[in-house]
Length: 216
Image (cartoon, rainbow, N blue to C red; front, side, top):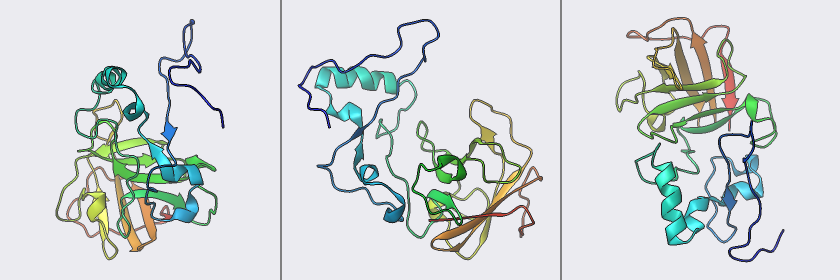
């Protein structure tokens, strides 16, 4: 809602003892084609037009900023992927069953089954507070393209239970002593559970009393 001129200073960050070490900024461009969400009704208007802010800088500044980002990510697009929903597959954002609010209200209840933003070759469970016995954190694995163990989320469709093991937390290379199983019960619903077994074995797997349902 503020009209600004090119080159105008609009704010500052950090600069004093105890200040945050990072600076988050983002951009929405309503001139862009809308992003495709699996369930558009879950998202506010601004969510359809999120874009990479670095792409909007002049070439010299853009290159300087991408040099900073490249310290963490080397696979294109360097700025990351805005939306990862795959309709009819497990990949993407999921909402705790029975909640009717939009994505951020409250975000902690929700779940993302995605690829890591820094290393998109890694699959990641981005977990909030809704999965019984599982701390709010990110849990990484190496996706496979066949079978039912550690299968890439983009391949997971209704009809089978899938199992995930050899999970690591962010900044921790130790394998977690549990496994996660999940099943898409329809194109818009999944059930997921953390189980106190360190490996998947050969299956089959079944859900117990701690399973939690999510929907789109």
